[in-house]
Image (tube, rainbow, N blue to C red; front, side, top):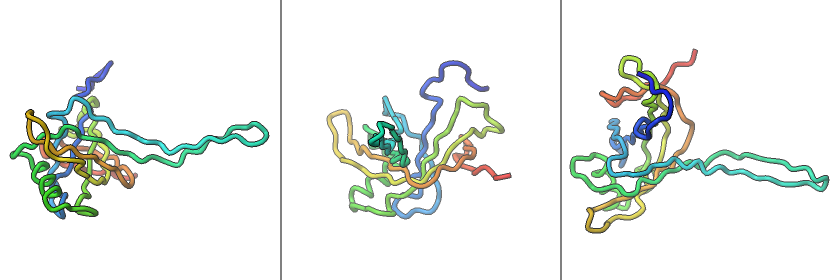
Length: 167
């Protein structure tokens, strides 16, 4: 059933592929949000405005440097994402060891056979610190999106993404 009217935040779902982190090869998408009160995708647009000697203004849009912060992220031994984040922290991994993919799922739209409209994009997951306070051990991280977004569908039960076919 499609949602009409104001959309509750829980209907915009964000999944990270923990299986591909640290050189892994099999996808294992985990939904973000259990301990997050807020999660925003920051577009960080790169824009310029200038004025010439005639007094005319020009505007140039150079694209986006998209990122998001998962803070806090509480360590949970049942989470594959936690295991990979801990490995990154322990081994001080960098570069392609941090590369994976993220899927944004629009749960407010009508599902077809359990599959929802979704967008997949490559990203790098970079822990920003580790430790925390008495509330629990935390490894907050930043997701840096790279490349083009791919439209498709996401099956919530099997946690698989299927790219849309071009016609």
